[in-house]
Amino acid sequence: MIFIYGAYGYTGRKLVDLLSDKDVELIVAGRNPEKIGRLVESIKAKGKKVRHYVVGPDQIEDLDIPEVRLVINTAGPFSEFGESIVRFALRNNANYIDCSGEPLWVKKLYDEYSWRFAQKNLFLSSGVAWETVAGELVLKKLLNSIDVSSLGLNHKIYIVYLGEFNMSPGTLQSSLYIIKNGAWRWMQGKMIQVKVGSVYFEFDFKGRKFGATNITTADIINLMLLLGELKNKISLEILFAGNIRRVIIFRIALNILYYVLKSNFAFSLLKRILDKFSEPSESDRILASSIAFLLDDLSGKILKFQFIDSAKPYLVTAKILSYAVDKFIDGQVKGVGYTSPTLLFDFPEYILYP
Ligand SMILES: NC(=O)c1ccc[n+]([C@@H]2O[C@H](COP(=O)([O-])OP(=O)(O)OC[C@H]3O[C@@H](n4cnc5c(N)ncnc54)[C@H](OP(=O)(O)O)[C@@H]3O)[C@@H](O)[C@H]2O)c1
Image (cartoon, rainbow, N blue to C red; front, side, top):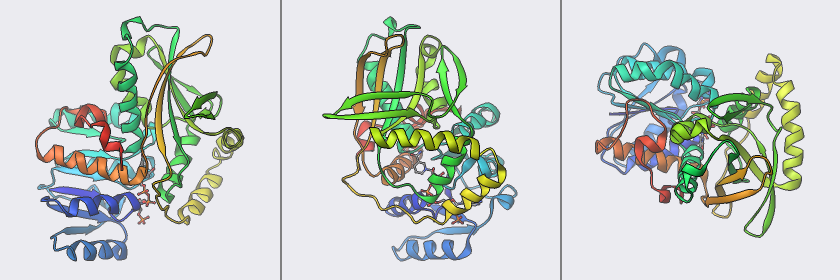
């Protein structure tokens, strides 16, 4: 049985829609009775049976549903209330995945929950979503195209996301946690904190010039797991790219936000404002590419790059989660304890095409 928390959110609904066509038993849950009611009606209208729970994060931890085998959390910000959903999975001896993009959340799962799940022979993974999966797959593509034994301290890798799509209220709120906690860089085996927006990188792509700056997402831990021993030799950082003028303005905004968000009052006020934003609509025309650059660390010269084009990141995230369910049901999941998404589910590149 698959339990989906936050099932009526933008990503959750797209996932439920994909799973409704499959032979899989679903339990949907969230805190709002009207929203859950509407979702349940829409699933039943498709002729599919579904169980549901109206439950907030503060009550879910005590819920006993022993038939649940996999918990999928699509409700964010994860750093704020995700832990009780992880504990719910652990209590019920179920595996756990989510679509978070928040790096410190992933670090928490890795540091504090990996061994607890491993003890029960269960897995957990975070960032089972467009962004991390695109980052992991493009990193693999880069590493497969070079002689990795020649890489050393003089090399760095940038994983760059290029996408100018609208964000959902949940993503915008998660972004506040991401910006507030600064940016992180892998440097020869150590994860060090750097200022958000402190790196600026320009590159040509498909005949256009782009700028990019550093904001760290869930990938920083997942990519480290993928790099294995190589992480002790090189440095790696995550950047977001766009048209040069926008990135320059974005860097200034990041700098201001980094300080403003230190105030708890400003943080919760902004979060409440962002919660009122409307849901995005996804268009085919908006690309969401992931690009991996190998650079000479001293000169900044680009030595090699690989990219994967995608679109509709929210739909792709739902497809990724739905693919993970298929693999889980087929017993094709490799790993116990915390495992990065692509190591756990062996996602093919085409999963990123909408
Ligand atoms: N890494 C990626 O590529 C990627 C892709 C897609 C999504 N995501 C992440 O997934 C999360 C959800 O995104 P979304 O687009 O689905 O956002 P959304 O449409 O705004 O949905 C957010 C969900 O979280 C629930 N929620 C918020 N605060 C809650 C609380 N205190 N207690 C219980 N439930 C709460 C909401 O329920 P209520 O309506 O009851 O508030 C809603 O179900 C975000 O954190 C986003 O960053 C990441």
